[in-house]
Image (tube, rainbow over all chains, first blue to last red; front, side):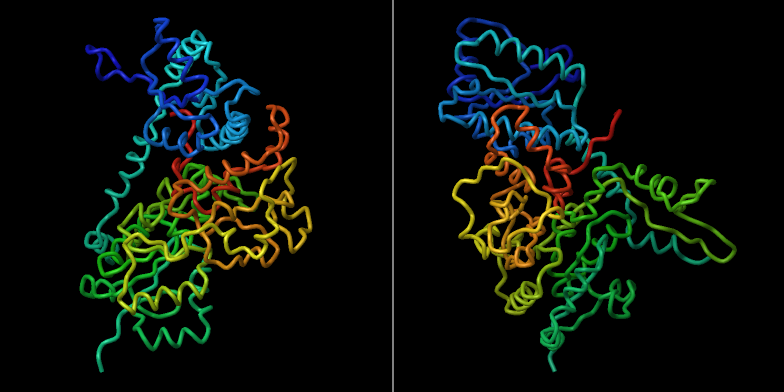
Length: 167
Length: 324
């Protein structure tokens, strides 16, 4: 959470999807080892990185997240044998779509973090927060509000009639 | 003689194909014309906007509005039709999800105008003349609608009651919709008037779809003659069928073309493009980044392929311009 005295200052908001068997356990380990990392990440536990529908990632960004972090088991280590490969393939194609839609590739990051790598959770989160801080806010909901200003501007039938009246 | 229910048709950013689909009712259009009064239909009948303005609010039973919303005039007309109609139906892919015009959401409006009026190979415009929003000469003050920076679906502008999907909707669906409206037994608001299952369910090639697909490469439809009795995905051709609502009776498949997704997703899916991406990627054989990219690079334009009709209604909606 942002500190009390600079409430208005923008802070990166990152949604993380961590797989139950590896990365989430690693985040637990980071916790019990009392490792400190940036508080900008909201972690959502999923059973497998293969469970992460690309819609989750897009929905996070569209709802105002500045970045999405995905953590899964190392290749070959998936609890369900190949869920992480599915995630990897979706990630590769999703990155191309994000690029076409003007979203920097650094905003969505995929990392393999095993249950014993508590230290890596810390490093990755800190790195990602720094990167996003550098990039600035993504602000999709604000962009949409900005676009929607033209709907308010659009004239009503009544005053438009005046405008086209012949002089 | 009791008064017949009133129906109106209107078009916004569209190609005219939806209007054509109304005519495609063929003899059935006589049934429609018998049952209802068409009170506004700019493409076919001579009514003016002022005629609509003079109507009582809510006096039209239903308006079928096709086309996406790009200009201020379209917003204005959508609002007018909404006010005058009991039921507003988003007719066709463009009104439903943005359609082809919404692919322009990959660009800023300034980029589009620059291309059209300066850069296109067929344009000679050394003075860089652009259309002005208003022009005053001796006798009149002439105005043009504003060209907005984003293409919208109809429901992003006004409240929509029902959706008739398709590019264009089939005459069969239109006929069903009109019969439903006349019967008075209306489905819940927001219903897409087409079966809520994936196209694969009604695909004539369903039985040839393997339980497990395993893509090692993709073929682009114009570079290959597809076998006409085998699932197109099984032939390594991208088919949007698994992520697309049924109801079209697999028209394109019957023409040996892959589904391009014009009916939009089923009600369980928010973002059609993300869903087909998910499905296709799950079924790739490759497991290393290099191999994966090699196969996926055979889809040259993922946004144009997966969001061909749905960019305006997708989660991201519009490209984020550089440098803001």
